[in-house]
Image 1 (cartoon, rainbow, N blue to C red):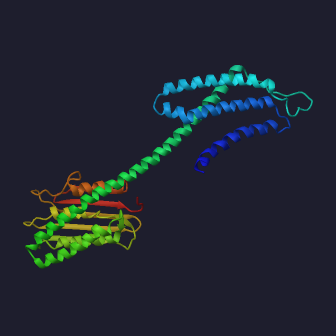
Image 2: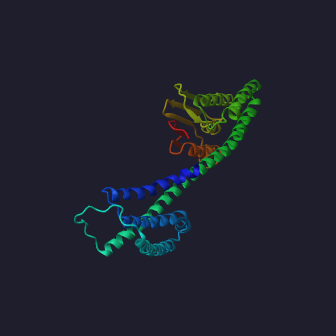
Image 3: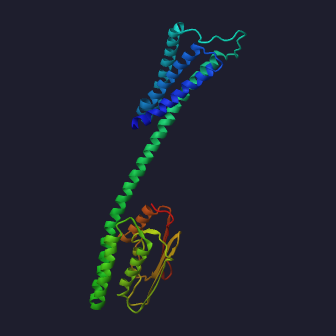
Length: 353
């Protein structure tokens, strides 16, 4: 059935090419057999040229950039087939039956025939058109097939890249969180126990609840809020922390763990135990539009305040994930200001992959 579907359009097109001229030849009750059989021979030549190019010559020579050889072979084919057309016509014309219907008495009106040179040019233009048509169809089919293959390969590569990034992200996140809890044990064991409980909830989300590429944004924000609460346990009184997380109840989906890297950098690089420090975190969701996250933290000249976008697992992974998941659908800015570092992440959630 599949092969029939492929063959049927060819049968239909060639049938139309043969039937329509036949109808016009006989619509006045007059059918000239010689012009008709001459036309059939011509169509046969066209078909031979078309399918030789379509199934062999284009793939073998043209697509392999052997253009001169391809043109030479077609010129030779045209010369042979045109000569064959003449030979066949001369052989069969004497044996054709007379016209099926005689024209009614009266003068036979015939339009003026053009000079031989013009008819010669028109014949060869028709042949070149047939060859060009086969090239156009074959090229279009190949382009469509290559496009599908490219999209499939791109999708497979995307999934592989995302799996690789997540395999790096989860241990990185766990490593840094355990370091924070370890430092808290020496200060307050009760708060450390609370931190372990919070960490178990966070790990449940990281390991089980975000297996899909995208998660509901309310769950992502809940996870982010719990992470910030966990980080707050180790802050000294000299650190000012402002957190604003607003979601009007949207059901949009977002890639998991999108904000943690920026927040983690703020807690890691924006705090100095000997000086007043601050961290401002804002995540605002606009229903049906997107989300904007801004993080600003203190800047201390003697400290290495933030990873550059091209270094380290954190921001390098975030930048890569944004390019893979939200191409041309995001804005990611990191800049050092006079006394602070500022990061902005805006994601358009109107379309997902």
